Length: 195
Image (cartoon, rainbow, N blue to C red; front, side, top):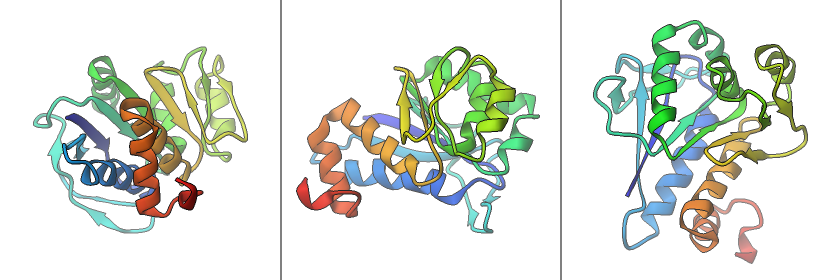
């Protein structure tokens, strides 16, 4: 079973983390053997408030979470503040080092870019964040009009709902297309009737 750790912070975009949470949870729910243990983490274990005000209580903090196999870094306006926190940046670097996959959704690219993980890579992000990313990571090659980009260990997705698409792709990458299609059909996502 793989541990999916989702980083949360104030002013996180709701669907950026809830979409992946749903995909990985549904994928495991539909299998006889659990595939994923999905949990959320904040810096200090305190609750956060999403961009539109939803309050969320995390499962863990930076000091007490299980090892993370797949790290999910969502976006939202809060990424601008998180980029200034050395503790957060150091924790993200450490999790990347130990993870099999590190994926960002939407403007979560700001955080990965800030710590140098996107240097000289093809990436994507929310269309309104492209100008920011050109300043944060001048060497990155930004792909527009795509849902996600796979660089092996680092994957980035476009805005908000694209995180669902990327998460289904990660499920397929780890456990096969049939498992991902089953989750998509259950969620009635995309062309689900043809799965």
